[in-house]
Length: 493
Ligand code: NAD
Image (cartoon, rainbow, N blue to C red; front, side, top):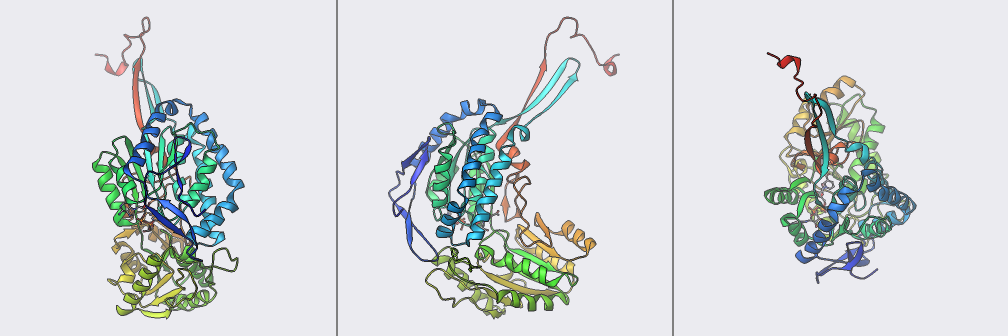
């Protein structure tokens, strides 16, 4: 390593035209791992030209043959799980166990996309009128592009391209410029799977590459995952340019504990949710809300759980909390904690002085969070827990529904009726019952609402077929001796 990375264009690793680079830094050790080239409009033009050239013949390959390279990729990925997980730990900082989850969830996307011959079947009906049949097929659309965030270097790109490509489209991926090494390894495997040249391409870079993709007239659709301001920008600019866009944004996730919840189990799940991947997950809990007496039990147990947290390098098996991604992220989180205290939060555990060479923020617990303050409203994206007390479940639901974000929420209870009521009333579109990270798996659709999602069609599962295909309907009559005069009995005079 220690050198600028290549793009992957038309089946070959090719140097970027971009001259500027960004250092890739191990956030635990501060070692420089390499440089990401910041690609240009010309890099995007080349990638899209290859993807466009490959599209028609790929779209005509039978679906059962299009998924064969994905079966091969699944095997290669499976054999490389530990190697990929180690790369994720080095460039991202999460623990090895979390990194394995990152790649294993990605492999599940490949598994599900292999079912595309079934998933993309259409509809047909004989005799929609006498002698006329109707067939609706799902047709691929052309070149799609994906723009992904730093927090799941392996999994998030797999939310999109295996489905797009299996459905007969071609693809250009722009991974996060902060964690490109994981995708370099994955593309090394992709290059061995037998995809025709140009079907799957990768361009490294940042903002300039993103905007070039959004403006390119030969791109049919864009999938984006990242922060809310950029998601809004991608949705607005991409859709104004006539593209299909699905843009997943940030989150502020509340979890609610009722007095009848089993305290130890519930709090363990909630604390794991807050601190897993150093809080850098779009499904991470941020504010824990105790209803009535549940609040006191919850607070006591949170402090017991937090005392068990071990901060360190993700490659050390003892570590349960790795660093955050960058110096800027660390400074932003520390500043947010300070602001929360200035706004009246009480600090119970302070992670601001966490020692260590890397970008470490220690586990932090803030109590007495009030509505209208930073800790109640802003995505912190770090290992910070806010505690809040409310009198009733409905009050908790009002809090959740008052947020601009609506990604996920969970309730912890043994009362089925209360859980059902909660599911029905909350706005976030991914809801958990007694679960810290309620993530819909590859075969279900994923995505929030409000400022957490811009678009109409969610990602993976059945939604991927909706997003990556269009319905194409043919009404067909064949001329047959004597049969064309048949009239439905209902239409006779
Ligand atoms: P980010 O918005 O900084 O970057 C995401 C992508 O956008 C990157 O590929 C980056 O190169 C590009 N980008 C950044 N700034 C841009 C700009 N000004 N113009 C055009 N493109 C730009 O996000 P991040 O820090 O990499 O990821 C963390 C965010 O992603 C959090 O807000 C998190 O909640 C969100 N996220 C959401 C989901 C979800 O499912 N809703 C999943 C994972 C992450």
